[in-house]
Image (cartoon, rainbow, N blue to C red):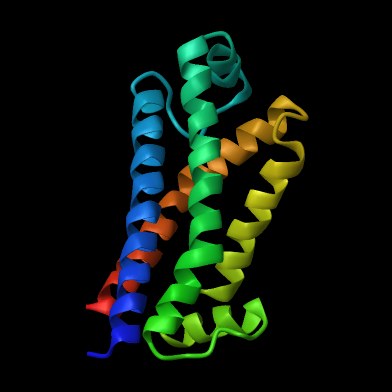
Length: 158
């Protein structure tokens, strides 16, 4: 194994570790909320969340950890996987996503939905309660897809 391969393998390992950390904390925050609330949330139980500082902190942690996870995967992990595979990453991001899709790691359309949700959070998560409810419910639904992507990446680098 060449020096570059070891370096790229370490980058993938580090990025996977960071992604797993965010996913774990996202899961823990949802578990805490699920002790009291049933998902999908509705306006009544979201009002209850807003009225409880601890539950509001858990919901904010869900949003934050999802954003960090999506950022880490999109900005670091995907590129490090391709570098480890010996591929050029000096190309448009769509080409990177298409290559990952050809490796059965992601579905490009699903990734764009995940990215769009991340962008929605960045722009207007606090705009109104309906948006916040939708964001939390959507993250709850797609967090398993993010976990599956991480598992597929782990299979590829083994």
